[in-house]
Image (cartoon, rainbow, N blue to C red; front, side):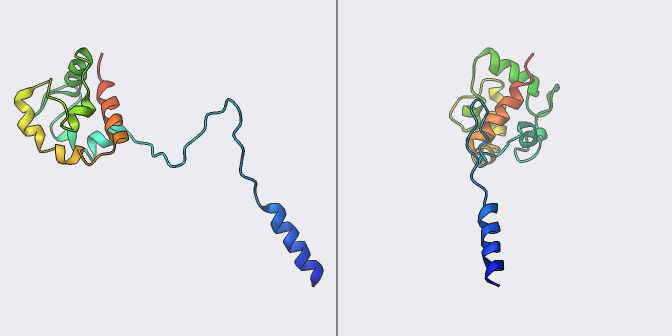
Length: 124
């Protein structure tokens, strides 16, 4: 019986994994980071598709128009969505857009950046 317990102890001890050491020149993955898709945010949580479509004006300007103007003027979509910057695309629609700031202000910085990257991907 003693031999079995000793054997189990040795097997258990030997099977404990040593934490992997970083390998040089290999990118490290942050397990706490959450992948955020700007496209999913745009059409889901952000409810942006209710007013914006890729290439046509609905209630608000098209995504392509927003991207073009923000790129030309070197504006920050993130700052606008946090209500820290003035509207530069269609200021007449600002009052309508203000209702969505309650949603965008609840988004994390990473989500807002992902949303901005998605919108800017429509610039030509």
